[in-house]
Image (cartoon, rainbow, N blue to C red; front, side, top):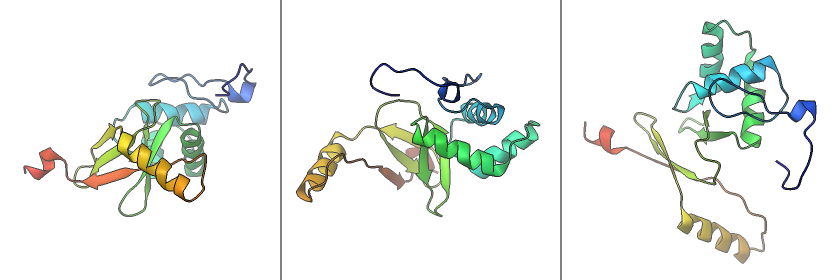
Length: 151
């Protein structure tokens, strides 16, 4: 999204999917299939999981294409990306367009989107202290959700 009035090229036109809002980027069948698969799940999924989902549905989308599409969607702010304790990237459709953070259960994988005004102020203050500007950050907090803790 360009912040000023602009025209989208054919490659940047929104891709309409049955599940979820349109995604921006190159309009391909594979991109639409990956976006639709993300729209079918609420929890974070790995690229391999999404690839397997697509394969079982009969969609012919290569694993490399799934990875590239997910990276493109993440770069566009259309999906959230987390790193698991094992270092694997997992993806989920953003439920909000606003900047947010995640609380993630280590047991069941449940993720809750939260705002953190104190974190925002802290990040800006630390960056400013060191002369940094135009700062971006990602925060994920891992723990055990109340439901898993009560088991």
